Length: 388
Image (cartoon, rainbow, N blue to C red; front, top):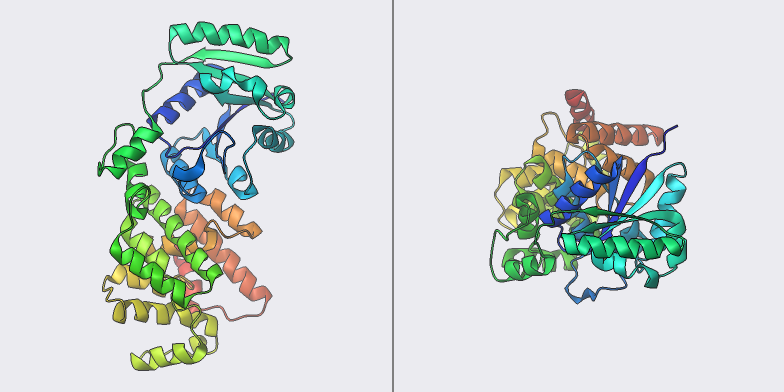
């Protein structure tokens, strides 16, 4: 079996930009890498975190920026550890996953020159080949010299020459805060997500109103889930070409009726003359999307049928499901707070095909309900058959 070279590229990515992508491409080509694993960090020891975007947002930005680049895979490993990010522990994790392959730790010159001071540096030397990219001829010579010093200390070290792009995450953030909607060096799709979720800027008044309402109506856990679904839905909308703002709104409000009492839900249904089917009457867990759709239309004055239907069918799906409805259904399944095993499977599938992920999600739902001898809504069965 041929040993593969796997690049490990960690960073804050606050936000990810064209310079990062250019650097990764250079490493991939010149080092003969099989793939590059991109790892947004949680709270890096060398960074001040007061201007650090939420980890889930930075993870989504990385997914968006690298979608369609087959050799890059984005990992949420460090974010899910929820502790300070030390490279040695990340390398040990991936060394366990790929025991027969060579890990290549990719970095710029600043990191390379300070490697000896890193936490458990000697262990890092054992786990990975240190790979640095030089931005100019003068830096290249200095890196080569330092590589020799690192080798004397037991490290494996390689240096490549890159025509680095002059792009700064700090300057991009400042540009966005100043009202620039197209900062230089920021991919358009990344900017779309940033603009939709108001990353680095103040939130829109209607979003603040929705969040305040949700915080009052939902449990803390359900409220956090709603925030996660909104972000996931936005990322999927940007990637797959749906309306990002509608996805964010529908994702945020999809569970607005989830914590209503049975009496409150029945009152809402009666107030607006909603008649449940026999199947819906027998399954209370199917009420909240119906009530939620009615609530946002009549209480929040949201009249966009795409948003209303995305909320209405986020639990059952339906035949002829729209792109936005599919996105909200899947975002509910794979949002960052979901930690059940099938969520990881669906996250992997969705990197390749939205429809395949949707089919898998429906199949898993049908199987789960069948095992529990629970009611399977006809809409779910028709949605599955329609997509097959």
